[in-house]
Image (cartoon, rainbow, N blue to C red; front, top):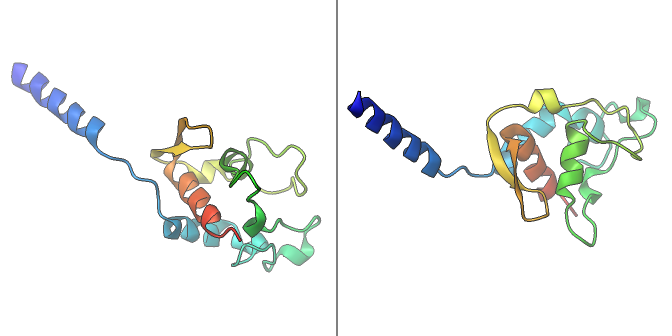
Length: 132
């Protein structure tokens, strides 16, 4: 019994010390192409094959950054469907359920790391990488 407890303690320490890395943009690009490119286009400029039939037109995702930087918290809340207040195109599907999974710590801009499903963090990382 004691050896089992020691083994469990060591295993817990190993898991706690394992570094969790943020996804790379390429991981998010795959998700983007599967879920977003139909409306926002392969370049993210809002010119996907379905864009012509939509009103209002999909947002240009390459222009999300402001003088303050990339609005991570806002982008996450729009993608997962939590908050779309004041946004044109509130008809955008909610992707939160499609983007579940293991979590990674994401700094949403306030210096506090928030546990975020890895697929959602991957998409965020990709969108941040295509800013012009």
